Length: 176
Image (cartoon, rainbow, N blue to C red; front, side):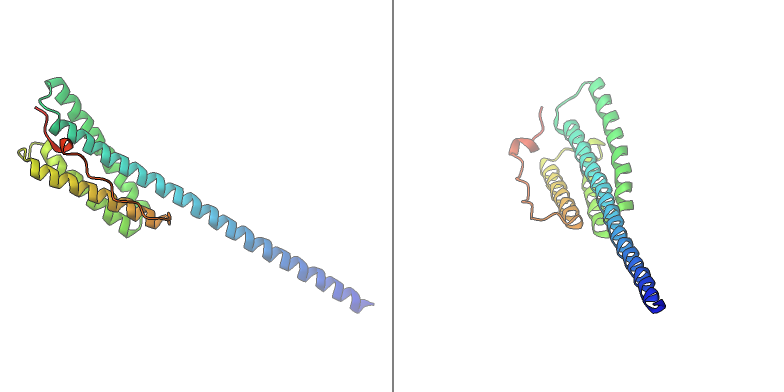
C-alpha cells in the first residue's frame, strides 16, 4: 500500500516537473520570438527613417542645384531645410549603426557618401557639370538600391526587388 502511494506521489511529482519544464520551454520560446519581432520592428523603423532622410536631403539638394535662380529668401529657406535634413540624416545613420549588421552599416555608409557627393553642388564646392551630376545621382540611386537590398536580406523579406527605372532626361537638367 505504501509502495503504491510512493509511486503515485512520484508520478505526480514527475508530472508536475514535466508540466513545468514544458510550460517554461514554451514561454521562453514565445518571449524570444516576441523579442525578435520587436527587434525587427525597431530595425525596420530605423532603416526606413534613414532611407527617407537620405532621400529628403537629395530632394532638397536637387531643388537647390537644378531649380534655377532662387530669390535670396528662397535660398536661405532651402539652406535651412538642407541643414535640418542633414542633421536628421546624421541622427538616423547613428540609429542604423546601433541596430544593424555590418553589411547594412556598410551600405548605409556608401549611401551617405553618395549623398555627400551630391551635396558638393549645393555647397558650391563643384561648378555645375551635368555629366558629373548625372553620374553622382545615378550612384546615389545605386547605393539606395543596395541599402534596400541589404535591409530586405537582413529582415528576411522574401523576393527580389527590381532595380528602379532610370529617371527621364529632364530630371537631370538644370532649369534656367
